[in-house]
Length: 351
Image (cartoon, rainbow, N blue to C red; front, side, top):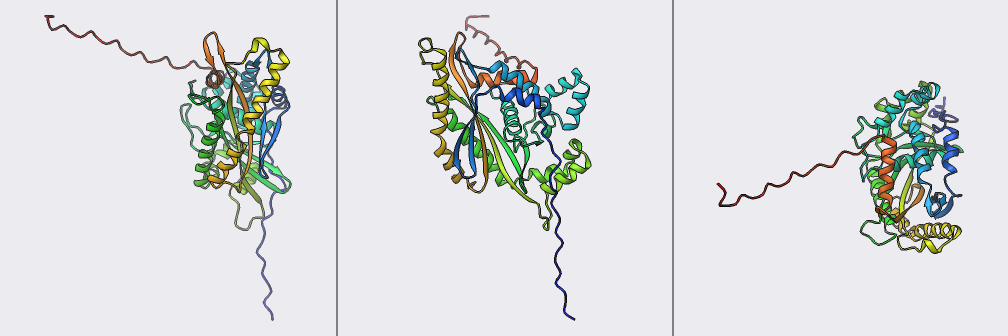
């Protein structure tokens, strides 16, 4: 009798992971209306840029509206789906305060605003539901969490894409005008390479630390675990990619705004925003190759912010980060430490 051929059983992939967008449709609509139609730029077959420019009124970006929109989005960003659903069913001030408590005290280096922007773009534009945000991984509001700035999941045809987020908002600083985008790109790639070098250990850690069980029901957790930790015989096709938000500066300090009409100001800002991104496409390609990340897919979202003269002095992206941190946390910055005045040196003739 011939021995029959034994075929290893195949674990069927779920037709879909039951994961919906965490952002409410009203928040998506409100956020997207703050920007002009996005411009798409190609970096490579698996890497693309979406340039989003805030609407301009009298030479100013719609920053106040952006802060308000992101404050609303921070509820679904910071809370698990379970807790967010409870809040929307029965809004209470205590929940809002709980959200704000999760954010750090505002400071010039605050980066959490960029993380909320990344989250909002990945959900509203890429339609990639949040798996867990960076804030959900924190144990205290002053903790910095190493690793991705959030994890999202997107289903495309028969593939599941696990998207690891990274956000950077840089100023020109002491560099020449236009240097902010290059430094943001360089820093983002250092972080992404570090995450890759750690073999994306976050996915295993998420499952083993019960964070998913706190955020999702049992059926969803089982489906997500099959994606994050697939069995060797699994037919689930999952690939990892990166979602990247980059904020950069447009220096308009020397622009003759008084001699430009509204349409000319808008056109000049939008043109400059596009030029700065176009000038860095080759640099992005170089960074992908240098860090050995050519096999991954990249979803870049870029937003410019103005560097301009005001009555109080030059204001730029650092001020945006700081103000956004205040809005998200509802906190005032720590008062600057006073340096004690030096006592006058004693005169040798003093008794």
